[in-house]
Structures are given as C-alpha cells and as structure tokens.
Image (cartoon, rainbow, N blue to C red; front, side, top):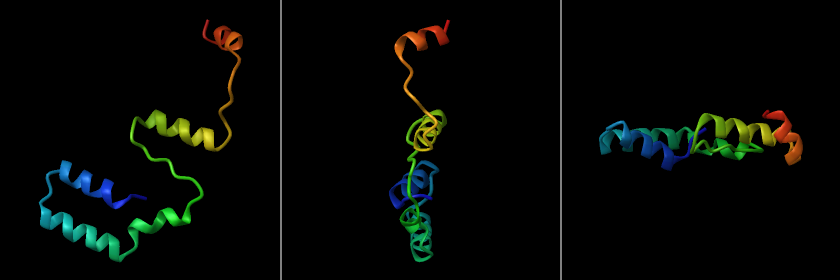
Length: 77
C-alpha cells in the first residue's frame, strides 16, 4: 500500500523523469493502487526505521506493555 505523494517522492529519488512519473501515477491511479488504505483497519507509515515500524505493529497488536521503571532497571542489568 502506498500513497501518491510517497510514490512520486520515491520515483524522484530514483531519478525518474517527469514523463515516467506521470505515466506510473496515472496507471496506479486508474487501477486503484492508491485506494487500498480504505480496506484497512490500521496503517503503519514507515517514515523511520524498520524497527520503528515493527514497534508500531506490535503496539497495535497489544504486544507492548509498559514496565515499571524498577522492573525495567532489573531487566537491563
């Protein structure tokens, strides 16, 4: 799943010409590629590291809990 702004940004970074970008954006728009977000319950936008995205996914799944500071200190010893 990708949005049109990220798609264009990635193509610009890859050195694509304006004509190439226009063609691929029009094609993706016609086939509904930018509409997949409507089918989702949660979206993780990976604007950082893969670890940050994974942490977001784990939090959505309820697999992340806060640990009291004393317990955390014991865990990292």
